[in-house]
Length: 317
Image (cartoon, rainbow, N blue to C red; front, side, top):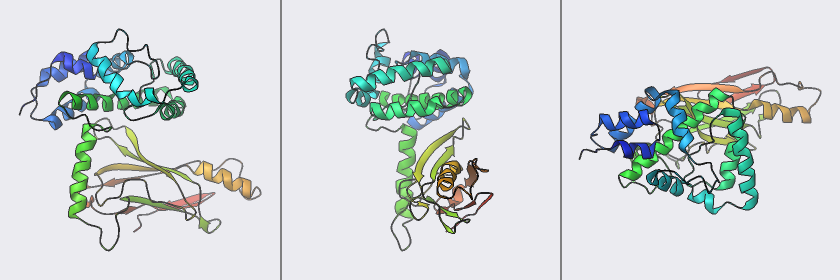
């Protein structure tokens, strides 16, 4: 059944006039997936920075109870539903801190802080705000645009009665496919595990590198922006085995493993001040790899061998 979307409906999902005009003009769409695909393409390749800023400016600040006043009713309804979890967990202390950091963020970047708030409590949002505040302006603009796209996907989902998830529809579709493929390709001789794992060994000490923060990122095919899909800290064995939910399928694409070696080497410096330098020679290690569709059901183990003045990596088993 073809899906039609009006200009006003599109504008309630994303308050960029250029985006709404284009999305409504290109319809009707064959199905919801086709609509979402078009929305992503229009947002990343046709809306432009002025359109991004226009969309961001309409959102109420997180924690601002008066921020809904004067907003179009459809837009305000979406916003209230998305911020329900944060509103319920908001107390006076967190509210004041959010107001302070919202203003700091606005002063630094020139646009309000925006986040995919569905299912997130106020303390969690505050933590994310502080973390993103440390970014450079061009990095944060792209991050804000990513959050807006997630919100747009969720709202487009809601227009057509799919509103029972805290994940955008594109992610829901992807995960359904992963569940089917996992069932079709059961783990040989063992339980399911994260499709991507890692293990860090300190070759200077000959021991596992414990307490090293790691992030797994995936590049968006349309925007080319990197989004964190998993995080963890190495355990006593130097391993992180929970970067992704257990399964036997990984979405094909370009991935990046970020190793925060500066944090680990700083701890080594405290334990062995005479051996480690004050400033780490390698403050971070980034490993990029590509998973092709024909190898999406394989397991990927990305180890790191680390010393103060060298590192190496390979695909393990």
